[in-house]
Amino acid sequence: MAEPLQVSDADFEQEILKSDIPVLVDFWAAWCGPCRAIGPVVEELARDYAGKVKVAKMNVDENAKTPAKYGIRAIPTLIIFKGGQVAEQITGAVSRSIIENALKKAL
Amino acid sequence: MPAWDYDLIIIGGGPAGLTAGIYAGRARLKTLLLEKLIHGGQMMTTDLVENYPGFPEGITGFELSDRMRQQAERFGLLIRSQEVLELKPGQPMHTVVLPDGQLTAGAVIIATGARYRRLGVPGEDKLTGRGVSFCATCDGAFFKDETIAMVGGGDNALTEALFLERFAKKIHLIHRRDQFRGAKYLQERVFQLEKLDKVEIHWDSEVVEFLGPDNLEAAKIKNVRTLEETLLPITGAFIAIGMLPNSGWLKDLLPLDDWGFLFTDVIMATEIPGIFAAGDVRAKLWRQISTAVGDGSVAAIAAGNYLEELKRG
Image (cartoon, rainbow over all chains, first blue to last red; front, side, top):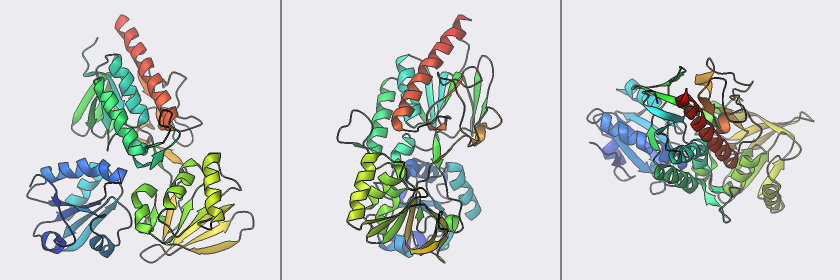
């Protein structure tokens, strides 16, 4: 999977919580500068970790339920899910190395 | 010219770096700009820029960033999304160390900017992303019809309070002095909101603690004159209390002031020949997009002259 998967409230459980490999979800919105800043990094990670980690994006403007469920009050927020549970959570635009370290911990 | 990879490497893609890129491109210097995240820097997270000349109606920080990038690329600037790990000075060329290798350049401009300063009070780290925020344009919409606080009294704090007004039920503006430092025009707009009870100003006050088991529920504030403490029930707190330079990676290389800002002379030269600094990372009095643009153009012209002299030998 080269491109991040776009997920919604409707398919979140199926695609993310029931995934058999760890999932990195990028919660974002179009009006958020730092979200645009980490967008390309998330896309790179989707390519580099294809097969090992599923990378997904959720637009918080179009999906209110899931961000509320996870108490998200800041974007960008990246959550790594493993076996349906939150393994790591990162808030704000951070560099690739920080996200990668969190991914390696979850793998 | 000696056999280096680039005539000029610019580190950082905010207004200082991009302006340096425009000037370097027009001077036909072979130039690479390295940016850790995305071009624009702090401009990217500014809702509306109203003090940059040429845009009488204001312009969003996002659009201004993108326009500067397009202008620089039009003159041949190469931009790579890459973090810089280390800068090794040398003569006649400097080495820039990247995660996947290294590059050499005759001249380097450091334009790594600054990041927001934290308050350093209990609860701040734990509740960041859970009510405590450093980016009003990113997170404001999560606080619709809620009572929130804005901490600070400069241009950024006032601009963010005015932006948040469209979402929040009420904003407590907490400032540690008895007057704002932000532009009078912004102050006037904030005082209008105060009359409408949308904004309540707490002068001479500091946040001493953020409280809440999982999400922010209150802030304890202290009046620095009377020492009286008050508990403000709030679900959001936005902090804009100044900046810290992104210069930690340079501390063994170049002299920094007490806060970590880089010293330069009037042509943006550091004490190492061929290494220049521009924008918010530099020790100076005022940090604006317009002053960063000024620094960037001066640094690029000075770097061009330096390379010219190097070539003449």
